[in-house]
Amino acid sequence: MNVRAIRGAIQVTANDPVAIGEGSKELLSAILRANSLDISDVISVLLTASPDLNAAFPASAAREVGFASVPLLCAQEIDVPQALPRTIRVMLHCNTERTVSEIEHIYLHGASVLRKDLAQ
Image 1 (spheres, rainbow, N blue to C red):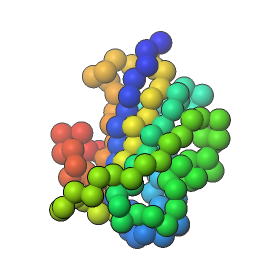
Image 2 (image 1 turned 90 degrees about the vertical axis):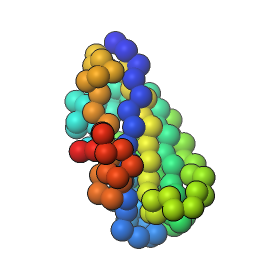
Image 3 (image 1 turned 30 degrees about the horizontal axis):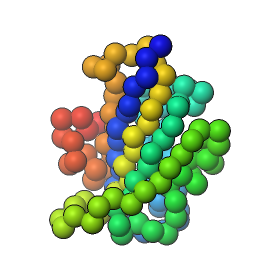
Image 4 (image 1 turned 45 degrees about the vertical axis):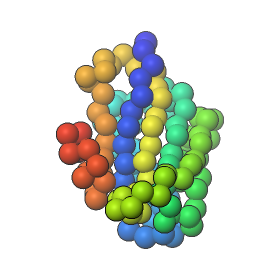
């Protein structure tokens, strides 16, 4: 079993708890599904939010979908001019048999412009 880091991002529709929560859940669920992971495979999750998202912690939504025993950390992204607004990013560390080249990084909705080489 190897330790791997999986990246992803999603652009949410608004700075409100529902949009932030739904976006966080959608992103984490897509990462698990695309990489055939169970929550028990997850070591830790780092979630960041663009500076314009402050209505809720993305990690709170992760706990609602089964990440209660996984170490979670939220942080704010650097306020870079012209950065993509309303964006939640993730770096998820997991145990997996997949090689680095087999890992599926997930970029959803407007966040697909961040990594066109990796976007789903």
